[in-house]
Length: 166
Image (cartoon, rainbow, N blue to C red; front, side, top):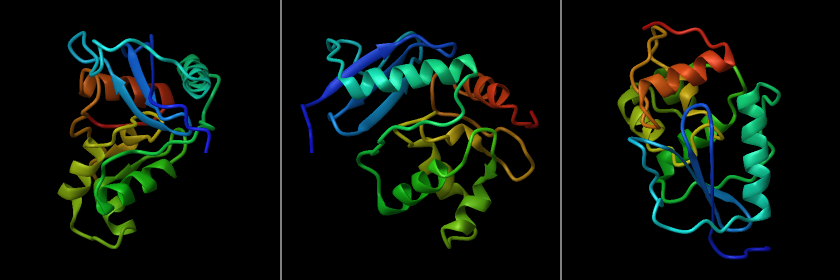
């Protein structure tokens, strides 16, 4: 363990400013600006080498030159079910899509679409854990909790060439 304490970095992106936090060993959160604000807006930045690496990889992703991330990510505070959903989401690659129902089935919880939706919406590390890659069974966008909501999800889906229905 090389933990150096909490770190914080903000960066611009095509979907609004991003705010990353880490513990020196792992990325803990990624927040997308909503309403012109970030959750830790009032705290000073304290970048780390890991967060600088994450910022470079995110910049490459938004530029279209990166399709996967090579970063240690450890979401905090989730239930066992949420952590299971986040693990499954982390296995989805660039341009891949799944449905809430398929996620529930993969966790041995058929019919748990609403619970899966709640876990997807609670993902503390969007983009790095691709919660934008989840659609309704009919291919529709049902919502997005990051940034400006559905417009942010539409941008990310478009960026990855994922087809959806409105």
